[in-house]
Amino acid sequence: MDEPKGGPEPEVGGEGEAARARQAREWLAQLQQMIDQLAEQAAPVVREVGAKAAELAARAAEVAAAAAERAGPLAHRAADWVEEAGPVVAGRTRQLAEELRRTARSAGEGRGESEGPRGEGSD
Image (cartoon, rainbow, N blue to C red; front, side, top):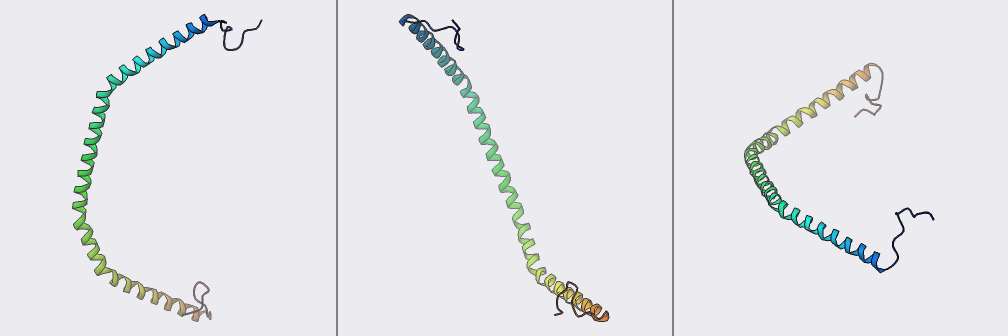
């Protein structure tokens, strides 16, 4: 008779099953002991890693706070400069745009064109 893929046929009767159950309980007990030992040995390491992570997080927070403190005045100066220079730059940009449009219209009229540089009607 052919054996099943799982190995030899299990013993029939209560003795074989009882022996397998006893063996399984022993293995589970050994496994539980190994897990308990590992947990006991790992606990101090895990606590140390957690403490180091907390220290690093605290240091990162200190560095970020110091950087923000130093950046604050610089950001205010930049905002002040933009507030002062922004309208001036905007005005000069508008003037440049008007000059470019005038130049484009003049060049178009000189060539006999009635449209702007992008096919738009003149302003």
